[in-house]
Every structure is written in C-alpha cells, then in structure tokens.
Amino acid sequence: YGEVQQIFQAANATKSAIIHMWFYPDSLVEQYDYRKNTLVEATRECLRHRVLPETDRCSASKIDLRGDELGSCGYQVQTLGKLIANSVKKDSLESYEVLRSPAYETLRNIQINDIEVSYMLESWAKAKSADSTGYHAREAVCSWLAASSNSTDKANSINRFIPNTYPREFSSDVWSLKWYNWVAIALRSIVIGVVFFAYAAIRYYKDAKTIKLAQREFLDLCSLGYLMVCIAAILCATMPTDISCSAIQWLISIGYTQGMVPLLIKVSAINRLIGQTNRMKRVRISKNRLYLAVVASTLFIGAYLLVWTLIDPLLATKALTLTSEGDSSIVHVELYCASSSVW
Image 1 (cartoon, rainbow, N blue to C red):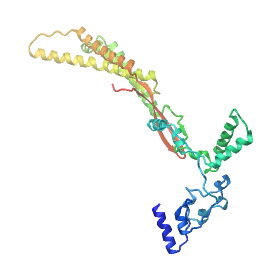
Image 2 (cartoon, rainbow, N blue to C red):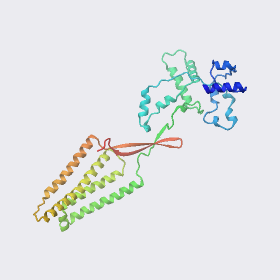
Image 3 (cartoon, one colour):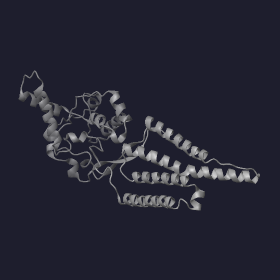
Image 4 (cartoon, rainbow, N blue to C red):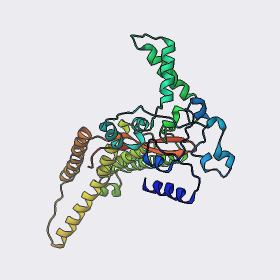
C-alpha cells in the first residue's frame, strides 16, 4: 500500500498519466482528484475473450497483450465462500501420495464467481419457480457442471480446478513374464535335473565305498534340501501371490537347513574325531545322535516359520510408483513379497 501511494504522489508531482486498479471510496483518490473509470459488468461472453494470464500476458505482441475488444469488462466478483474441515486437509496430506485423493486440492482450488451462480439461479428459475423437492435446483447445478466440463474454453472449464497429476491411470502391465524370467526358470529347471541325477546316482551306487563313507542318508537330505531351494527359485520368477510368497519362505528356509545342516554336523563330528584321536582316546560316534541334531534343527526352523506365518505372513504386496508420460500421469504397479514386520 505504501509503494502505491508513492506512485500516486510521484505521478502527481511530475504531472504524469497513470492507470491503476484501486478501490473506492478512498481518500487517496479524492486527494489528487483522479478520474474513476468503471468497466462494464463482467459476463460469460466477456470472460471467454479475456487475455489468458499464463500465455498472452507474457507475450511480446501488443495485440496479444491488449486482447480482444469483447474481453473489455470488469473483474468477476466472487462472493461465494467455502469452508473446509481441517481434518480433510490432515487426512489428505498424511495419505500416501500415489493413492492420495484429489478431493482436498480440488475443493481448495474451486472458485464459483457470481456470474456462474447467477447462471445456475436463472436456470433454476426457468425450470420451475416453486419446487419443494429440490430436484430442479440439483438439475440446474448439474447442468452447469456438465456444461463447464465439456467447455473447450480453458478459462471457464471446471477442469481447471483439477490438481496436477490428475486424473491418473493405472498401468495395466502389473506382471508379465519377461525374457529374463524365462531364462531364469530354464536355468533353475536344469539345476533341478542335476539334483535328480545326483540323487539317482547316489541310489545306484549306494553300495560303493565312497557313498557308504559319506553316509547315504545325509546325501539324500542334502539333495532334498537343494531340490526345495530350486523349486523356490522357480517360484521367485513367477507372479507373486499370497500362497507363493509363503511357499517361497518355507522352501528356502527348510531347504537350506536340509542342505547345510547335515554337512555341518558331519564336519563337526569329523573334527571331534580327529581331536580325540590326537589324544589317543577311543571315540564312538552315534549315527542316531547325528540324525537327531538334523531333526532338531529342522523342527526349530519349522517352529520359527510357523510362528512367522501365523502372526505376520509374507503376502503379495503392491509397490506403486507415479510417473509422468507426456500429459498423462501413470501409476505403475509392481508386486513383491513382504511382511509388515522385520523378522
């Protein structure tokens, strides 16, 4: 306000002509005896021919800056206010951005001037002067909304109130088997074939000295464990579901337990055997105790997985990513297995 007063005073001192938008009545206008020019009342036709602020007002052409003569009118008056509950803003800003509703930003942006209100009231009056049901009033508002939505004039279209990045489109390609998925499935299938071949070889040469020393039962457990891991690896290359996520969790954990624990137990027994023989002591290793250690390890992992599955199972979860492609906002959906807690 102070800077505008200085402009008025400088123009008066230098006898310079200025044109400025100002409110009336005001003592500043009376003090310098400025001439008050009032533009004609704004109409829908005039507003359609107004200079667009985002394009024409920054144009280097004087014709674009001056605009069409039909757009020479006063400013549109807006007396209709709106109240928005603070909880609407809070819920909107606290929600996940990709899934955020445009309701709050649209309500904040929307402005209905007196011209539009008069248009709706006029439509209502033409429909029926006395309407106890309120149907004609709703019809007038809906007709105005439909006309504004279909309007090609950006300045008068209701779509101007829609926030950026809306409306959004969800990507239809949620999951599809890519070429590298097929390559992974093929390689893992080959590994499964190798595991079956190794198991068959163990069964065929079960009476061989090497197999007897290595303990055929432990070799069978290792083969079973790595077969479970290979099956889980194939499931990892397919579309995640609630069942496949839990199956992967169980197969990998039990599979590595069956594949690694027998080997570790045998190495531990061999180390104990070598340590006792260095002391010239007799050592007796019970095969049943070795099997019991493998079973105990498997039961412990199984109990842990059972508690995990019952309390917080792995489920197929959607990861949403918002991207812009031209004038469209695309929400890409990716599926993966996850639980809500860290185990």
